[in-house]
Length: 214
Image 1 (tube, rainbow, N blue to C red):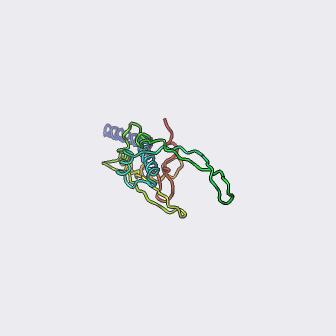
Image 2: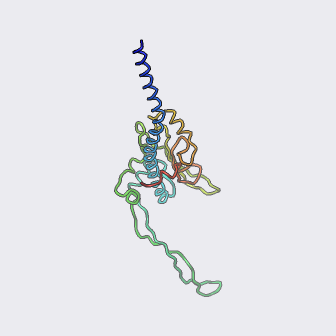
Image 3: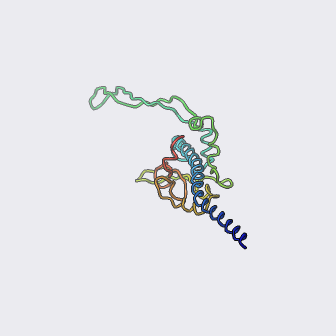
């Protein structure tokens, strides 16, 4: 029986050692996976935001769906203008003399394509609706509305994705802890998003670390 007990305890020691290693190593690996995936997801959300802001500049509102947004980036153009102060003399009937009137002159200098301005020679805007690392063909949720802010009709939009979709293959306990984050150094809540349907904002809910360039 002694050799058998030695073997059993040996295997048990290996198993317990492995579990201890996993308990220490799993959170470290989770953080690596999270940072890599979140970085690519946030890069997509930034492309969506830049495209939406360009759409609003030209159309006065945000796009309600990705088909309209992609088509706009593909074919839309900015108008390049130059603004300068000017003045002219106008006869004033009250004073019965010519008086100087100040004005602003806006000249159209030309046009530039949205695609070239935002993406140069890159066509990644055509797939900016696809969620990186998610199962299947998961898409970002995106909506746009017009809200009332103290009597002002303001266009707003929001694009978002649940963390569960991005980290679907990670340990459930670590994913639950991730969804419960409330820290200035983390992406708080259960979603990664940009914009808002209740406030006039195009900010994202990620911390500044994801805005730093390598």
